[in-house]
Length: 299
Image (cartoon, rainbow, N blue to C red; front, side):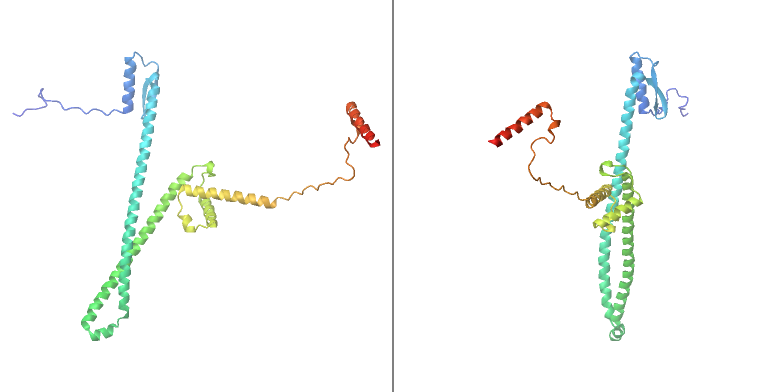
């Protein structure tokens, strides 16, 4: 009779799967055990929200747990940001590789198409009726070659045109993605370079107009999506407008008339204009000076 494992006491029971334990919950439990081992109770505890679950821990250990949670959140955020950057770089790498391969294929097909066209042009000068009368077999061979080349030319032309459209669409899509990233970056104000954090259709149109005044083409400006280039162009416009206003102010400022120098005539007075307003000591000194000059004049 076959042994029934369900009634056999010696049969090994299947191992139960261990429940998943959250790292923060395990850490909080360890802290609680540590507090009990140190003789600290949970009377003076604090409730923390860990992954949506309230857990009470001693206040003396709450700060340690909060710091650990902040470090873990920061690490998770940086890891996710790094993963997104790597994913974006991989997508960009694949797009760049596809564009390079497609351009190479297009170049080879265009070269082949040029060769086919040159060969077809050679058939333009053939007098098919005369060739049929002279050599019917040669006429059939050349007629077949011409037909094959013409059909191949039409298929290859359509293929080349399709690759060109693919490249143009890819460039437009890449430009739109780059512009979207630039807009997200340009939404952040940078007062140190005169950027107000606004990049809308009006701002782009004004910068395009200013760039064309400097000598850039519309195509060059429309393909510009780097935030630093756009902010630099805006800073150049601010400097240009400031310089133009300064030059306009200098032209409009009235010239200040220079004072006309006065030429003294007659004798120069060396004494006070009104001796009566002098103090007693000053008047005595002035009077002695006058008398001394008079005595010298009488000698």
